[in-house]
Image (cartoon, rainbow, N blue to C red; front, side, top):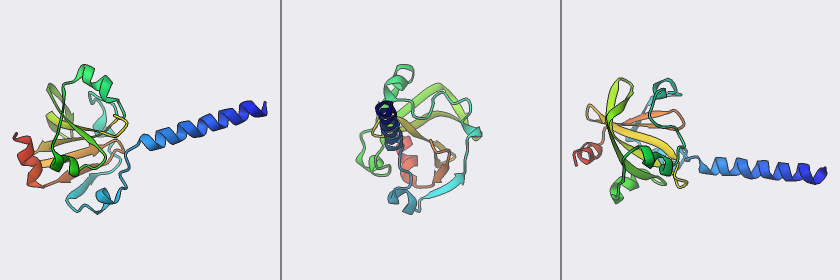
Length: 148
C-alpha cells in the first residue's frame, strides 16, 4: 500500500511540474520592465467568452480548424521572447472589447500551447493573454507590420 501511495504522490508531483512548466512566464523581466505595454484590463475573463479558440489549445489541433501562418521575423519574435507567432485570419472573426477581429497574431509557447492573442484596433496593438490580462502597445512597429 505504501508503494502505491508513493507512486501516486510521485505521479502527482510530475504532473504538477509539467503543467507549471507549460505556462508562459509572464513575470519574465522582459515583460515586467518593458514600458511600451500599458495594462488595460485585469482578470478579463468576460471578454473571452465565445472566442473561437481555447487557452492552451495546441497548435496541431488549431491548424485543423484555422489558417495559421508562421511569422519568421526576428524583430517581431524579439518582442515576444519564448513565444512562436502565427498570423491568423478569418471572415467570421471574433469580438473582443467591442472590436471585430478578423486578423490577429496567435502566440504559442514552447509546448505549442496558445497563450496570447494580439490584434490591431484603431492603430493600437492589443494583446490579451491566457492569464486573463490585457495590454495595449502604441508602437508604430505593430501598425506597419499589420499593413504587410
